[in-house]
Structures are given as structure tokens and as C-alpha cells.
Image (cartoon, rainbow, N blue to C red):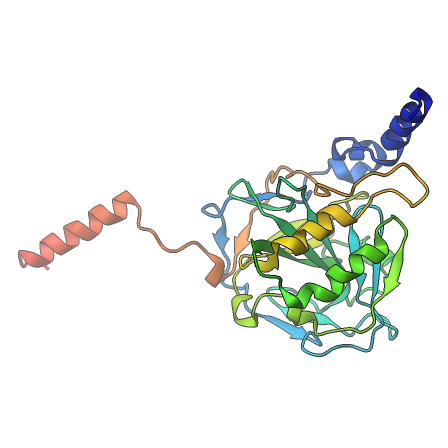
Length: 305
Ligand SMILES: [Zn+2]
């Protein structure tokens, strides 16, 4: 390995992989005041009774497809639009003002020794995170949706690691080695019920909501974020496949492992994070509330009340 090879490798890395702290130099929005991801302080969220259950359309049947798995150099992405165009897998309710239909899903992960979710819970990074990206049906194209606040709705799911594989992820995990390098893609042999990738339906009423951005340039601030509390189980060996199989570099370039492909938490600023009624922290009386309760109890005991 010559010194020149090392030099050009370094130049290539700097040009092709500018770190998130430099994104605002290439895309103005990345320095904005409503960026994602964020850290969610679970005791600081505000209950919003308007955040009801989601209605998932088409999630319970395998669509026509085909679905394509793609290594885009930053993540591995599964297209969900299918031959019939977008409109097959849609969500409503969940406090959304419009219907949104799925475009793609993708993942963020860490390294062999560290976690890699984008959002963090009380400062804790989770093992992995999946984003299912939906577009507002008011708009005809992603380009148009990216020009409007609430143009996109992203459903974010954390993962928890277990020893046993999650068989529902076998199709995606076995496809990873066919898309090892940037730009490679493969058509999945078959589609499947998207709900198979998610936690049980009854556990999806518990979530956090805030307004934010795409987490890669151009960081457009057009995303209604839903971060679900219930994590998805994934096998230790399956997660290791994401960490070890994928390269951020094309097949003919010096290899760069695709690891830690998450953006650090961005300032919340003036924004609030809301919780669905079943996602809000359990009621815990303050010290003053306890004092009042004891006083009322004491008064009741001596017959004042
Ligand atoms: Zn993402």
C-alpha cells in the first residue's frame, strides 16, 4: 500500500463522506432550527389526547411489488412503491392531518461494539432504528412533498437485540450480501406483509410525535416524526449482518465500512415532543400532591370532611 494510495484514499474519504457537522456547509437547511434526530426526554413530553391510533392500509397483505433492496452508500433501503406506483401502503389517523403513503424503509445502525439508533431515549442510543418514509397524498412527487411542511411522515422504530433470530427479517437480512457495495440493488423474490416487520398492532398506540427534518442532506424540515416506544426484536447475528456486510463505497473504490450511519441528536430548541395517551409517562404525584392527599385523608379521618 503506497503513500500515494493512502493520500488519495484520504482525499476520497473527505470529499465523499463529509461528516454531519459539515452538512450545513453543503445544505443550508442542515443548520436549521427544526432538525432531526433528537433526544427524547421521556419525562418531559407533553400528553396530546389527539394522538390516537393509526389506521394502516395495505400493511396486512403482501403487495404486488416488486420490492427492490438498494445500497445507496448511506444505508440499505427497501423500496415500497411497487409496480403500481405509490399508494399501496398508507397510513391515516395517529394525529396526522392527511393520508400518507409509503415510499421506502431503511435502517440506521452502529458498529460491532456500539449502538446506532438516530433518536435517543433519555440520552440512551438504541441498537438500531428503522424509518418507514411516507409521502403526503396531497403531493405528486417526493420533490413536491419536500417543498411543504408536513410533506413527509416517517415512522421510526427502535430495535432490541435478542439471541434468537426474528424470522420476519430473514428476507431483508439474506438480501444484504447481494447489495454489499454502494449502488448495488436486488429485486426481492417476493414481497411480504409489511406489518410482519413491526411490533404487534396493539402495541403501536404508544408513540412520540414531533416536527423535524430528514436526517441526511438536504435536511428538509418537512417531516412529521412518529417514534414508537415498543422496540422490534432482532437476532444478534442478524444485526451483525448489517454491521459487517455493507460497504459505503462502490465495488471498485477503496473499501469503507457502512457503520455508525446515524446523525447525532440535534437541538430541540423551541419544539415540544408530544406523547400519545398510552405513550405518556405514568402519573406520578408531585411532593405537593402527596401532601395534599395526606391532608385530605387526615381531615376525612377526624371527621372534618
Ligand atoms: Zn433514516
